[in-house]
Image (spheres, rainbow, N blue to C red):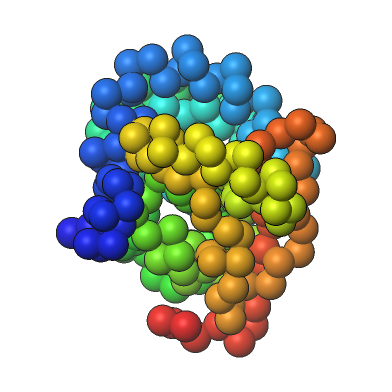
Length: 221
């Protein structure tokens, strides 16, 4: 059940967000051009080593599938079966033999602590009803010294820019996400150390975040 405060804010659960239901049929046409090249650049820059285990939360229609090297093991999850069905149609038995797709809730993952070397989330953190809980789950299942990698819009650190962007917040909330989430609200956990924060272009609204799992992680911290 969604947090009442989130409901008051108008932020819906992922499977009820228009991005994850009403717009699923046009998601590829709209967002491939906007998101795909950024995701490919970020994944390529990670230098994922052979044999690494990767979990992508909110894999959607699979815009990222071609970005991961074949020498790693990738699990892509999403709460929307409609999205996953579209992603499965893109899987090539040979080219994507290292990828499997499963339907599950990213805020309540069934994996054991420290199961993955990399845990990624691309343009999904502000769609879920509890972004901090999502990132906490990502940290939990990440191995010690592994990486949590996020691409998302976060509230600007510059007041003037933040004020302008927040003017469209009422519109984005109708689509299931908010412009007002600050990075510090989700990457302030004791288990994660921020290693890198950057944009792939000066004009991008989206921030790439790379955080490393700390040794002193305690479940539930």
